[in-house]
Length: 207
Image 1: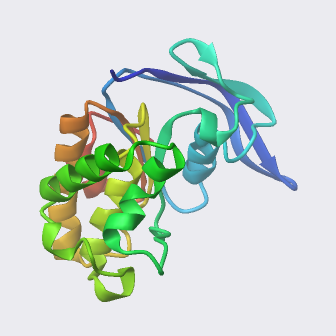
Image 2 (image 1 turned 45 degrees about the vertical axis):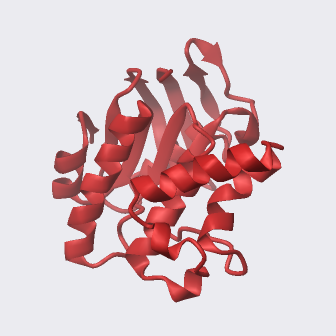
């Protein structure tokens, strides 16, 4: 079941630099929202506050009207994907995706079935035993997406995840991300500085 999210009067200051100043936003359940703007405008800061990786100086974050501002990231049930992908270099693609399920003590058979279904969905079954260094950028990106969604998060957060890909692959991966969003019935928040990317993905764009 997808969920709604609300940020209310968020303020964040780094030293004397104001990154966010009174930002409020409602995101509907199942919506795909893009945060669009140039580098340094506060997009990633807002995403990190939503994720619980940073605390706001002022303001609150709500999930389904529950205040989660002080909850740690691991208790928010979010899938998070960053620009770097951050795959474990010593684990195969399969074990990278299964990692979160192992941590949650999901039965091995159930975890393996869920991971195999995901690899079929992203059309990467033939690469599941490869290490990250043996895969292309597009394959690593799909593995990173799968690792974020395999735990069935309520909300999927993405911080410029396509920026390391070449132009042709970026276009195809936009379609992939949109399809995953629809199939998972998730609420998705996507940070980008690329206007065409935002327009091709989003139900709503926040500038």
